[in-house]
Image (cartoon, rainbow, N blue to C red; front, side, top):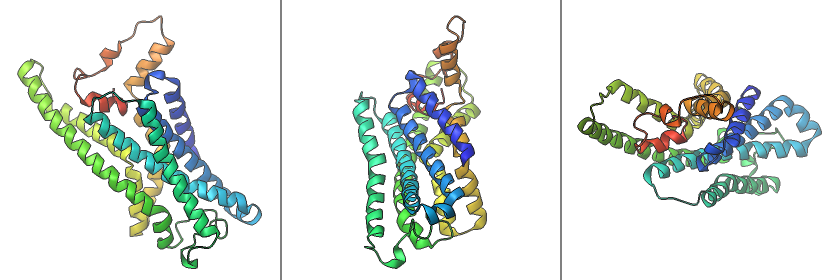
Length: 300
C-alpha cells in the first residue's frame, strides 16, 4: 500500500498545480485521490503496528480504526460523486456554479461517511448494540480484519459500499448507453457531411478505452473487493488484494499519463519553443459531446 501513496500524491499535486484542470472535475478527482491516500496511510500504520497500538495506545488505535473505515466510505462516495458528475456533464450543457456544486459534493462524500462512522462509534463505544455485532475496534484490533465474521463486515463496511456501488452501476450503464447512441449519430453525420474515412476499429478502440476509464472511476475495484469477501474464494481475494493495492499507479496512469498533460507541461515549461497547439492534440471530433467526458477522464 505504501508504494501507491507516492502515485496518489503526485496525481494530487499535478491536478492542484495546473489551473486549467483544477475545475469541478479536477477537484472531485483530487478529493477521491486524497481519500485513497488517507486510506492507504491509516491501513499501513495499522497493519505494521496493530499489536503495539492495541496494547499501548488504545485511543490512537481506535481513532485510526475509525479513520480507516471513514476513508473507505469516502473513497466509495467520491467514486459515486464522480460517476454522477460524468453523467450530468454528458447530459447537460447548462452552465452551473461549480463552487457551490463542489461544496454539495463535499457535504455528501465527506459528510455522510463521517456521520455514519460517528453513529457506529457511539453504538459500539457505549455498547448500544448486542455483543455479537460490536466491531470491538480498539479492543480486539484496530480495524475489521478479513478473518472476522462476515456479519460485522457486512454491517460496517459492505452495506454502505453496496449502496454506492449499485448507484454507480446504474449511472455507469446510463452513461455508456448515451455515449453509444451519440457515437452512432455522430458517425452517421460525418459520413454524410465529410469525406473523412472512419475506421470502425478505431471507433471501437476509443469507445473501449472510454468505457474502461469510466469503469475505473465507477470503482470496479470495490466490486471485486466486496465479491471476494462475500464469496470467500482465496483466489478472488488475492485478485482483489492486488488490484486494491495497485490503485495508486492505476489512477496515476489513467489520469496523468496522457497527451493532455504533455501539452500542459510543454506549455508551462517551454514557452519559447514551438509545440503543438491544444487543438492539434485533440481528435478531429472534439466538438462531439463526448469531448466533455474525454476531458474529464484525461483522454484528450
